[in-house]
Length: 146
Image 1 (cartoon, rainbow, N blue to C red):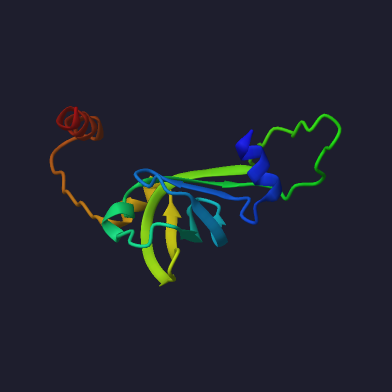
Image 2: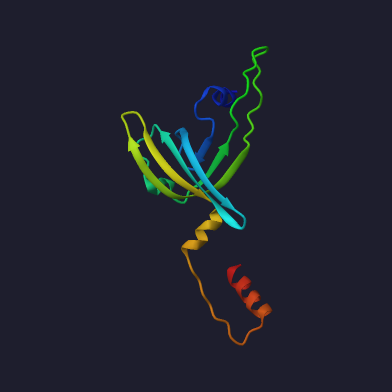
């Protein structure tokens, strides 16, 4: 019930959650890039009452970002609120972090949210296989990994 009320009365209707951060994260703005056969990338700007969140607590952590439509009408009849369903929820990992500013009661941060698959661009592995067939190569790789 509390989430439904927040969706109607809160200026920040979008929800950001990061594993390991218990404080409420209030989304101020976001910008996303998506494309066919490309991993998504969303920059999300938010405030938090925790003014000293370090990069080590956020980078690499699982996160979800839910996009909600603006509320239409507040029903007064029986004071029953419609269920809060996000239009879309993105699940990924925090791949970028910046602290933008701070005041006496909160700090403003920006994270980059990407799918875990996007982290593969950070590493490279090359191998050369000689005198082996494709099935032998695949079998050797699978056996070494499991």
